Length: 502
Image 1 (spheres, helix red, strand yellow):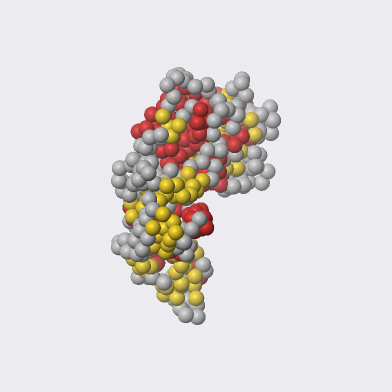
Image 2 (cartoon, one colour):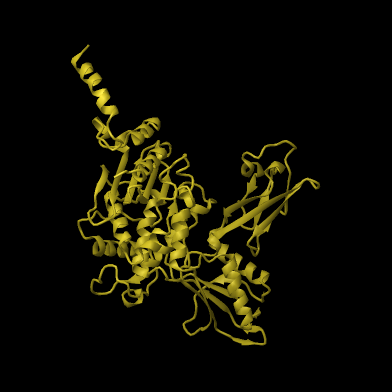
């Protein structure tokens, strides 16, 4: 037996006796064996992993550090930077206000003039809230508009973009582009209700869209056809902005299903939807909805306040809503920094420090984030590379170390609990609900996390309450073509942290 083999045989008993956090030889460093095993199963080399586990207390005790200073693509985990900056700069109770104006007069239920709707960047201006605003206007005497509904998008100054530019999937709702007047995420929800007796599935669409014709029925597939790729089987046609047609069939075995699609002509979505919703709510209009600017002397009729920021970032972080994240990111770009640096983690109102005054642009948001980062974390903390603030980007970068610093800082923030409350709970809700399913999982209910996935990227970051009573920040990323297969390695990292015994 060779000397090397003899030494290896002698080492086996000692290696088997090592605790889970013990040093492993070679390129895997101090990674837990469960993490190493998951990486090997995924055929992902350790050089593709970056991770850090550190306590939130002042001692900042590190339980694991592995390539933590390497900049990586974080995918949707980058939303943590956007949402924490928003909590700190705007406050958890911040709201957006969609305002309704007129240049005319109201007389006996008739508005003689135009109705102007000026967007403020509300990330969740959805059907129910739009209808509520319309009902409030009607209660104030605006039932017939002798003019147009004019939609003002000027709070955001954004160049026209192709929603399919990122991955060629223009009709996917996750590719919806931001807008100062973001109406119902620019999406149409198609509901299919099979009726076996008539041999068709009835199609119901929301919202009502002015000038859009949608097939009311689609033939059912032959008896016994499986559900499978039911969307592909519909052979839907979205090539005409005025119609949605179905040239295929719908399997009866699917039962009732919904299909949210981004409207094929996003530039005209808001005008079509707002006019359709106004008429559907019982209002009348002699003109049409169109895009325009609100006159400076227009009279304010109504303000529709958004949900508070704390609710908005819960949708952003628990369900990884890209366009909502970009709405928040762009809102930060509207802020004009005060001349002098402000105290970190001030509990005062944001209106004492920053006032939204200018139209939003992505470059202004990046500037605000950069200034905020330097004030908050200092020049020694590696600056994240931001693009649109949602992580739906091939350009964004951050180090696990920088993200861990942010999460530790947030844990001491006056509104830190509301920030942490926006994260998914492992095994319970949001995108982390699928985790911690094994019997006896130490992480189930004890880990608040943000997950992220892109082609070649998987990531996870958040807080873990361990069995030893300590609270840890956990950050882990895999950047590799096999990254999706390596998600169990990151889940193993979370479980290992939750199970820390001392």
